[in-house]
Image 1 (tube, rainbow, N blue to C red):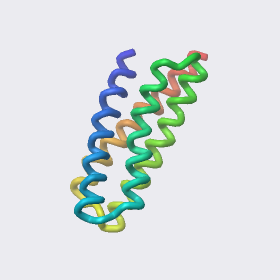
Image 2: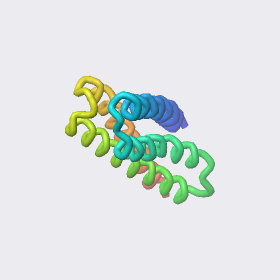
Image 3: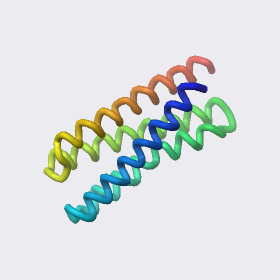
Image 4: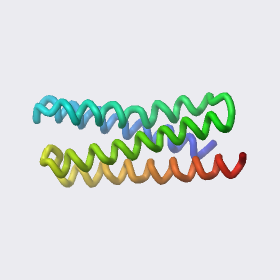
Length: 118
């Protein structure tokens, strides 16, 4: 349960960072398309982790965590695209990128552990 609580808090903090970044991108940079994708995938990571808390079974838990992992991977893609296209500052990218990489690593470990207990 401790790892889930870490995932829960880190994914929430991450979602807040995504919201702030999207506010900046839409307000200052007038970028709307990639920002919308980033907001959708970045906030889905934590929402799916929350859903998994009340999974109906271990396979349902694994499924929700796996989808969260896919969303985290997609979010990493949007961050990279925003950085490489000049919308995001490299220093800010490093901070947020390290957060998403950490979430991906935690989700991979959670899914592997859950699968090993099937």
